[in-house]
Length: 333
Image (cartoon, rainbow, N blue to C red; front, side, top):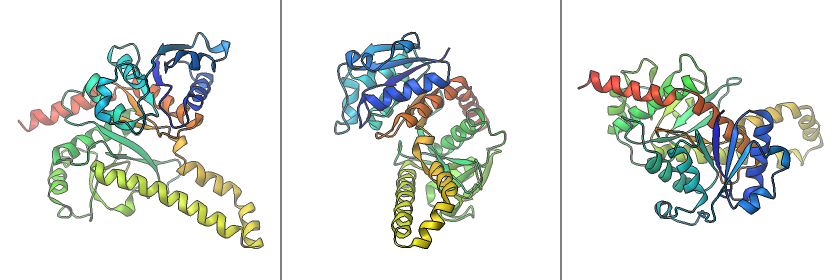
């Protein structure tokens, strides 16, 4: 049975939605939940019927969003430190946290360690596309803001492995985000990365910004600076479009009628752009499993983040990444 450690104290809205999401996940999947945080608060929110499925680990310190990520290693009594260490000590198969993302990333990288051959882990996230039931995986979206060509190559390898092993895509297509489709386009880093990525059979070349949502590729490679801006811009656009539609619908009786008739379409659209549907972003490249959730995650988001952790830890993604990087190094040594 999979064991998932959950930072119960880290979210913006306190432990309630995190605990609720854990209970919802237990209702749907068979696993052992290890909630880490203030035991008296956690236990007061757990019905007796879940007592055999949940373990509580005491942690009386919480890393606040205002705290520096660099201080996380000193805060050994914090909920995120103890949750990550459960994976390090093989007492848990994965960790989920909606707390301080920088602290989670730093602790997971330094305490759990990197996969052999990985220089820098990357945060990956799923983006909706125009193709039914298809999302594109983007990495990196924030772990590395000054990536070199070899880092981008590693992101391509890690993204392909995640698409195959976790998302179940047999033959994923990997694209490099650039300012043009031609191999000559891009800055010096992306052009060098292009030459390295050519060794991957899944690599289809450069893609542009307009290809992110059209389903052209399954995996999109970029550095964390570009990826994070892409992610935040997409979230802002989706929210703005929703508000614009609602504001203008209220102004016209005809539009209100049309909106009522289009309710099913709006529900589908909302589901596609709702971060809670994806749950969180995996930190790929560490020798374990860590899912970084949004600070404002609701119960549904936590539930889906836990499902991500279960699927990730059940796969052979880390072994496949190590083997692929080993093969590349052997060919180019």
